[in-house]
Length: 150
Image (cartoon, rainbow, N blue to C red; front, side):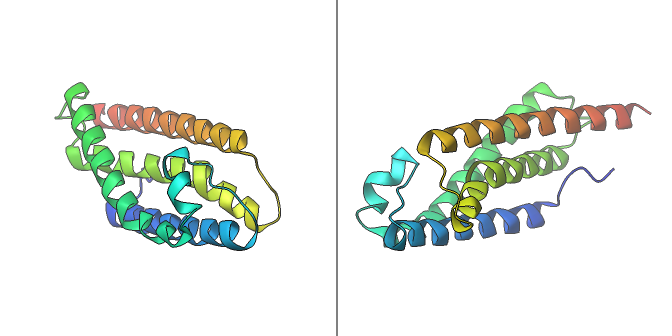
């Protein structure tokens, strides 16, 4: 069953997305009169756009702790004999890849292609990415439970 990405591949994809998003956001703010949709960093990066590149290692650290926390939380709810920690971690990282690709990278790719999405559009994409990641997680975990019962 190939529904999950290996941890190293997930991390490489996430790092690629973080870098891609920082570069596109930097170009959008400095050359295309774009604005930052993320209100947590907008005040800083719109004033000092090179700070986008500082967000890359910050995102890696934040995502690491999110994945670690979600893995620990999930391990409390699932039977450890049926679902190993490594599998849960891979599923969570794959869900994060799904979330990030829909919520952030899609908007930046659209911006490059000339489609200007509004800030409420970014919130809708974030919600869509979150929902898709949750659906993926639930479906994949249920498939692993069924596969391990046989």
